[in-house]
Image 1 (cartoon, rainbow, N blue to C red):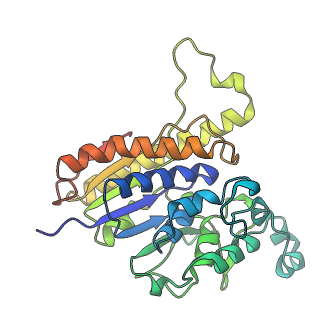
Image 2 (cartoon, helix red, strand yellow):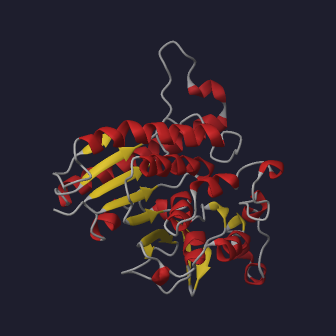
Length: 306
């Protein structure tokens, strides 16, 4: 029997998405090939590049201080996420007030940096999810869905965090972060033929140890971060439960490293984020490989942090 078809599904999480690179590094070390990539926001960024053969080390280099970068001309600079209004936004005050920043600069970075900016030219399927702000639900970009949209635009739309960024326009529709609808679009991976789905999820809540001060003593930022972790972690659990019922032949490997205390925006913890993603992936994937999960399809079950 041929080996199962393996999918990588990456959550959002802004800077925390660096942990996805650690997960992919572990998969590479274990010689686990990915056949299908699915992502939203940070997961979409990582997937769009890795699906095209961009090395993990090259992506890590984007986050280094400028004096330590191996390629100073290619970096995911913070100013790309601080775009000024474009002409269309300035002309409409309401639209201008729909978010703090524009993602136009970020989209242009993707356009010039991606090896290919066309879903149809990729050798492995890439599926990117976003949410239609006008109530039309989840939008999916990639093969079998909307594959005529440039990858750079689809990823920018998927990364438009509500409030922080103005909804991203594609054609006559406006889109925001795909996780508003679903934290993890596992169903897209299954419908693309995946037998084994490797989830990389950065929203595991921080657990305060007995005897330690409550998170309420750490201020509003810590409480807001934990609230987001709790909400999206619960959405993830419900999504996996639904996959269990609908697709009993699929194996779900859930990798949720302990990142609860880390900021969603700081680059100071890049090494720790990647290391935790890598170690948690080895903890979950190595035993699964020894059991033969990646050799033959098995009955659905979830391994890892729920």
